[in-house]
Length: 336
Ligand SMILES: [Zn+2]
Ligand SMILES: [Zn+2]
Image 1 (cartoon, helix red, strand yellow):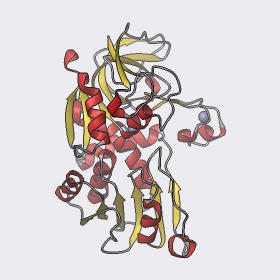
Image 2 (spheres, protein in one colour):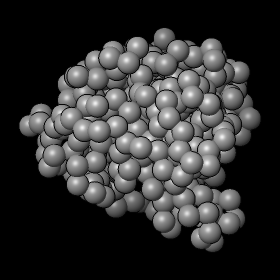
Image 3 (cartoon, rainbow, N blue to C red):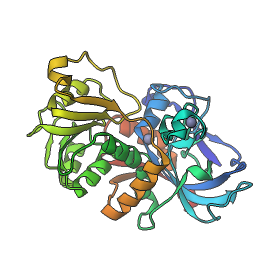
Image 4 (cartoon, protein in one colour):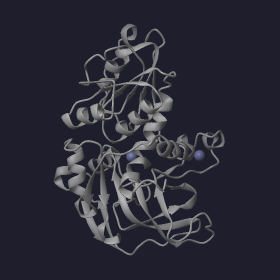
């Protein structure tokens, strides 16, 4: 099979991804093998190939928004049948025994494994996954539409929960890429007022098309104070901007795995009056199951730009340079 691997980390335009030919992986006990039809391109993949996130092992295959068909079963598996379509997401394994796992916060596990970081991911013809960490996918969604839900969608959903927007409340969304455009759909369907603050003509147009109550630039003040905000852009300088836009008692949730440095905060203007600042770290499987159910029920639809699996470096470069709106998806033509 063919697979893309991170050669040595470098700016995306200088070619950090390398194509290799290797034997398909054999599923171990508790694992199934997936013949990959699509893999979404997440900003985390870009942070990984560029070295903002250090690869946890050499030559790892990125990609953690994987849709494919089960084509081999490891010993002791029972959840899926050969031929069944499943999804593979970021959380690949947890120890199940640390204090965080035991209290239900497996996203905070002290010994987690992540798809496309610790274990080989979806920029390839096939991968293996622990069956307990895979997802059934809503039948109404085509492969390409389902892929971005698996990280962008799930993490955005967790960030929306973390932002604790009151019913009917006012939500600010800073940055409007793959994750934000899915989260905005959930928020709007739930009756929230949504103000999008983003750069990029593609992103602003998509926000308008999806029905945002207002759309402006990232440092503009929204038209009304916000009960809650989510920062999707990996831009620490927007933390004080978003905090200033919050009403008293408001919450800012930072959704990304990586953020550029946050400037010094002005306590009186940006944190006092019980404004809260919190991060979002990975997700639990329950977040994933809840979001996929909700996405089907609310008709959440990913806006996607398809690339051939052969063009993975181009897709990452286009993400880095903001050349498309919504989410990029690698389509593996050889297995369709
Ligand atoms: Zn744990
Ligand atoms: Zn991701």
